[in-house]
Length: 223
View 1 (tube, rainbow, N blue to C red):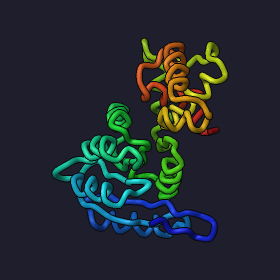
View 2: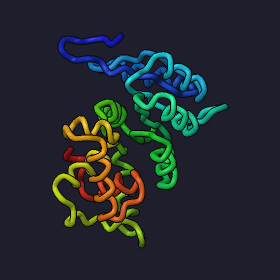
View 3: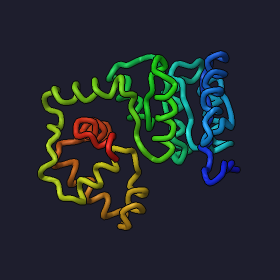
């Protein structure tokens, strides 16, 4: 059951973090927000998947390094069993390859533990709204690495039609083909066609490439 504060429907958050002290701190930070509520907690990846399947939160704040089943493995499982549940990963690691793994696994966002609490709150709101969020401390690095890699998409969007760019922007934000079709009031097949054509034109081979392109083009800031 969703809780409504005034005219605002609270974002239902599940915390997955194996350190009790850190989990308590996260709960206090999130619960202090008028538009959020913590509906459950888990101390490892298996418990996180079970709790998410049972409680159906809007967002799981997922620690990456947990015992038994890691946050990465739990994210992959959630993408299969609960695709409507958004995962915002929380970690100390800022390595680009690690970020790619998590995005590929189905995570919608990536926040560093060493960042200010406001980044976590912003990330929760972004992924709950259907977007993609990368901590500003790593977003610039991802964009720079992307821009200088030979053989990667060049970041040019001049050849795109207006609708193709619109679709690609929504892909960068993390929307599924079905969600994009609903937002644009077109068929899923039409979205798939625009998406395929657009990715071919910019040389993108995966959603990770599209997210990087979105960072380079500033799509994730102005959407």
